[in-house]
Length: 297
Image (tube, rainbow, N blue to C red):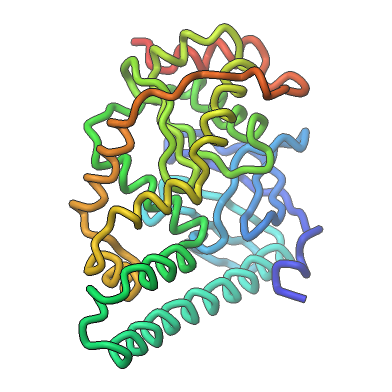
C-alpha cells in the first residue's frame, strides 16, 4: 500500500484563499490521484493541487498553511492534525520519488556516455523515448505553461468569471486535469502539453451554450491528446536538446518558444460536437454569462 492509498478516504475542512486580496473560502480537502482536491461544501470540485508541487509555508501545532506556487499567491490553511500529517507523509513519498527520478536520470546519462561517446547524435530515438517516459503530468503541465508564457497573448482575468471558469474546468472535465486559459482576441482553441487549452475570448462568446463549448473542447482534445503534444515537442527537438532534457529536466527557452509558435500556427481545428453527448447541466446561466464576459472591459 502506498502512502497515497492509505489516505484516499481522509477529508478535512480548510480555508482556501485564491489570491492574497481575496477572502478565504471554506473548502473540503481530500486526496485525489497524486493531488489534493479542494471542493465546496456541496462536494463540487473547485481545483486540484499537484501533490508534488504543494509546499508547506508554515506549521504551528496542527495548524498548517500550504501553497501550490513558489510565490505563495494561492494558499490553503488546515487545522487538522491527521490531515497535516497525511499531507506530510504523502509529500515525503512524492519527494522520494522525485529524488529517485533525478538519480535515474544521471544513471541513464552515464549509461549513454559509456555506450557511445557521440550519444547526442547517435541515438535520438532512445533519447526521445526516455524524455517521454520521464515526463510526468506535472512536468507536462509546466512545459505547457512555459510554452504559453512565451507568446504575446493577454490573459483574461475577472473575479466572478474566474470562479465560473474554475467550476467549468472541474465539471466539464471531471476525470481530466485541464487548465483553460482565456486570452483576448479571436483565436480558436489550441491544446498545449499538460492539457493546457488556450481559447480566444471572441471565440468563446460565439458559443450558444456551455454544453456546445464543452463538446468542442472535448473534440479538440481528442484530436490533440496530451501524449500527442508531448510527442510533437520532442520529435522536433534536436538530440542535444533531448540529452539536456533527460539529464536536467529542462529544454532551451528557444525550443519552448518555437514549439509554442508552431502550435499557434497550426490550422484552426474544425469545431465538431456531433459525436459527443454532454450529461447534466455544467454551469448555471449566470455563471455561463460571467464566463463569456471574462474579457469585456
